[in-house]
Length: 275
Image 1 (spheres, rainbow, N blue to C red):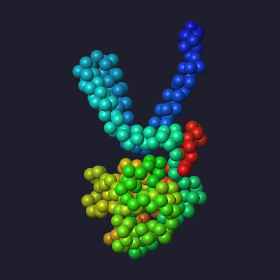
Image 2 (cartoon, rainbow, N blue to C red):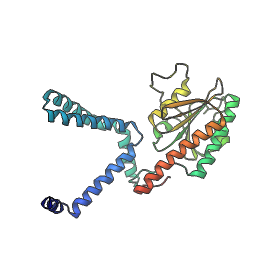
Image 3 (tube, helix red, strand yellow):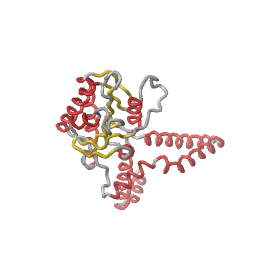
Image 4 (cartoon, one colour):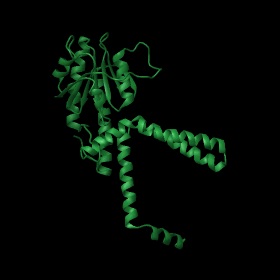
């Protein structure tokens, strides 16, 4: 055993330690970029294939080993295509000089004020049966979908939301995307859910709310034009027929959880704060 430790100590140098730390930083940076996206699930699938291939080779299962190797080859070739959004976001951060991605998540006071403004607007629209779809961006950027609408970049307020969704106004169709405490864009087109288990009676707004929360960690609020019912979509799940108090509580809890998770990583690894 002493000889073994001596060999290890002879191998470990300052250069190798620095090399290992740099690799860990890069791996963590990549994890931050894909955390909460579908890319994580794809990486898990590739990891399972690698483990299965190692076991098959160890057991001498030549045909299964060959099949798994071919699947891994195809998966590796497809990685640049599958991870295109994440790779583009990484290059954008590098180009702007930010090695770690920033976040627009709100602290307690700002969050509570923003939630109150949104809830008041939603409650008013529900009483008048004004259809609405409001998406609150979290750590996963919604730039691609924001660019399908009209750029607003205005300070969040109850009055501005009500004005946007007023009937027969140019921007009332489509979704409003909020980033932090600012309205990023209006009249945006969102992806519809592909979940076959979704009820057939759900309209386009509800399906779009589910779709965007399947693609990101955003929260989406829907006001039904037919009934005035309020719904909240998070993590691909839809809660319907909420009252003002329930909406405020669930929305605030979700935004708080996202902020706390980011703050924990910030304290541990020193990533950048919000914009």
